[in-house]
Image (cartoon, rainbow, N blue to C red; front, side):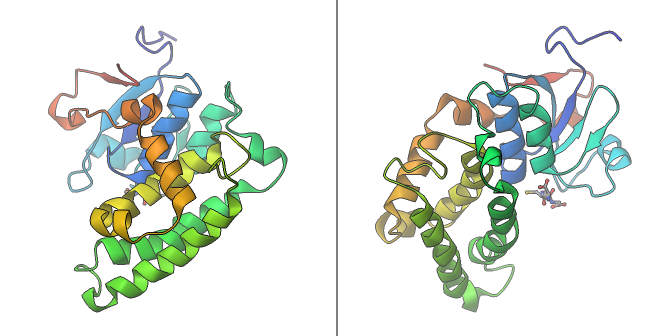
Length: 223
Ligand SMILES: N[C@@H](CCC(=O)N[C@@H](CS)C(=O)NCC(=O)O)C(=O)O
């Protein structure tokens, strides 16, 4: 097989810059020191090639060079990090079951986050109710952290990669309220520290929409 000169492989990631599930997939590529072709798509205009390989049609989707299609963000993270994990991002798996807490955030936290952030699309009357429910979940997470403000132990792990992109959305939903009223100090430290890292900055780099330049491949990460 002829390997791509840029990446040393032929993997393709379908991604959408702002999507928290896609952010965590890109972070895992970064932390596993891997590379791939990235195809930035928009959810309103999903390209045929993407719809052809993914019946779920959600981002991220990884098409590996062997032709495997991985459609769940957490599976994409594991696929990369189980091959190479120099910072031991996956170590919580040796001691607990991270999928439970991550899955809880994906379902329950995201449920309230969407209804808070996009309250006009749901029920504007219930905006505060959903924010309070989200805060309740975050307070439990705050209690899981020690003074280092990491979710597991004293360094970054699969938890930060998976969960912080959602907490960032929570912050962005009403940044003034977050800064003045939100009281979880460790979570605030954790998020502000994370979004200043090179990993996050590189992960949030803008790419041109793939459909506009099909022939011109773009790669993640790029510096
Ligand atoms: N369980 C999926 C969820 C992915 C997901 O819901 N992504 C959103 C964007 S943030 C999406 O693609 N939604 C489809 C759409 O809006 O058409 C995963 O973890 O990868």
